[in-house]
Length: 121
Image 1 (cartoon, rainbow, N blue to C red):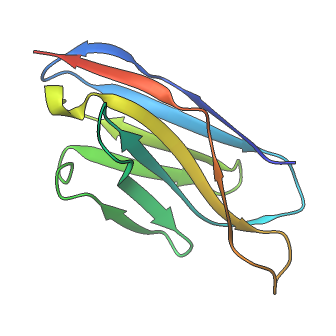
Image 2 (cartoon, rainbow, N blue to C red; image 1 turned 180 degrees about the vertical axis):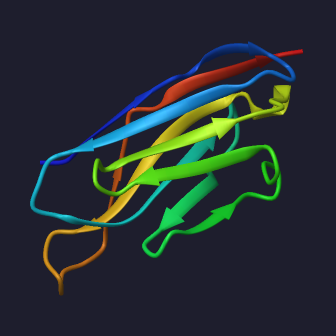
């Protein structure tokens, strides 16, 4: 069984910083990628940042230069450092892990429950 537990959300003023963390618990799987998505009220869930195997990272254009994703493969954790936050960053942020249970099996996607980030103007 896989469980993703997020922490670090909260209320911050525009221009401030927050750090989100996510830990993946369980065993017997191999993680291919870990990342963060967000969903604002009335909008679809969107990719914020992702770290793939080989330490490649990708960011949404809207957060480039402000957010930094980091991953600890030994601990199965991923963090998102968010700086220069804007009111439009307000959303529920979800941790995501893409993993395989066997080398030839399908790539499966698991989600955390989400953590709310509110940026006030």
